[in-house]
Length: 169
Image (cartoon, rainbow, N blue to C red; front, side, top):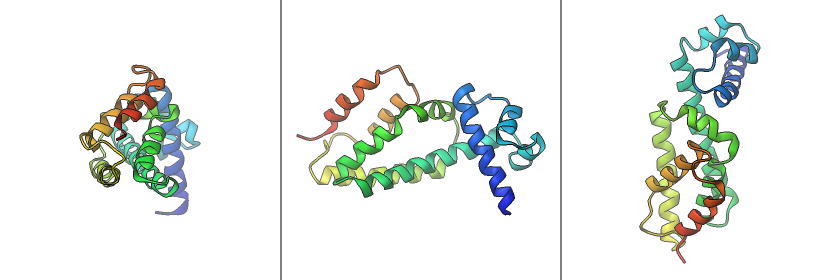
């Protein structure tokens, strides 16, 4: 892909992220093009329809979560601390609206890669004796979804309490 085409694609995805966070998955394509500083024709050449744009945005979002797992592993002293740091990152306010809007959008390969990476971390935390053995990766994904995709349903102040409950003491 040419450098200018890559820049346009990146600007469109960034504009789409903001518009989707503010207005949901039905944010006007014209608004996205305007915010990206491109014409509507350019947007449609890169993404032939809304579904293609949302799929690319979902793929990007999930890859950001995978990168967040890796950053947590690099920054934290143990697997449980990394799990905890990742969950806290995943539910930060700025990501909630995007997660909600993209909840029904598919990025199956990226999602499988995220689950595999998180599962490795969960198994290590359990092997270290730091995380309860009766809680799995699916449970963490549900917790992440509850806070990120449904902000406000469960007050954020409960997240540390729930995470404390997952720690093996």
